[in-house]
Image (cartoon, rainbow, N blue to C red; front, top):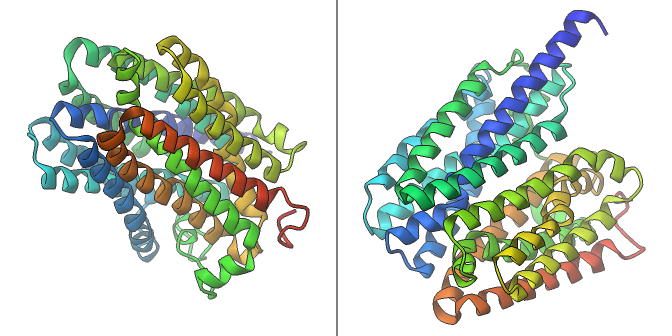
Length: 406
């Protein structure tokens, strides 16, 4: 490779790593501490569940609209669209600093945050595709691993800050991290737009002509994977969203919550760095079954832990659970279907798991906390994750799989 190209590759990888690191720092205050912020304004568990479920629903709705706008306007760099999204999210979130207990305005604010901040990962992936298609070799796994690292570091600091100075620090920290992320995005290498549909913007909207239902009926193992993902992430949302309530029940503080999330994020890093090595030896089908079982073990352990210190310890399940899923799911979705369906399979699996699963978990979790308390919530999380594991095992563990899934 010529020396100038090597220099460009190194520069772009550093830029993209900075973007991933700073973006996942923005994600922590408005996601990890959303429940703490809303509880400080006297919202009930049911109200919080409705607010956060609608936030994820808004994200699902917004992504195809934003990607369609991007594909129709290739002269606008995708990074500039993402910068605009983040600034809108930060601007609307500033209202939360002054907002009292007003249910409908809170729904509207969090839906806009969902359409902007929560929708950003899909477009960061599209930017990565743009860069790769331009001929620059991008190490996505390392950049995403650094994102988890900085997410973890901010979690420790923000938890202690909230304990010392109160929940009013959450929104200013979010706005500050957004400004940092926008700075690094503005400096990121942007390839010249292409007329071809292989451009990163257009990739998001290229879809085959068959209906989604025909596609799902034709790929039964993949469909089972999507159903299992929805159940697993519903369980994950019950625990992750309402972690402040769980920590309170264990006698923990906001700082303990931040440390717990940080430990979990730190355990994701090794598998993201090592996935390519692991995947050469174990199929993505088996890795997803292992991941599903780990989600169940974490839910069960969370229900049984006697104290905060044990809560820290069981975050090790994050490595073989969430950390393994995020990489194995992308690999499986790419290999389990025909070439023409690859883009659609990635989109559907994200909607089924992170989208619909989070909507169900947030909405149902809020209602369960108000009616049956923490024990009822965790019992439901165990049931959901175990059912998800069983479905994953039945569809991905059977010898006879979809024609292209091997």
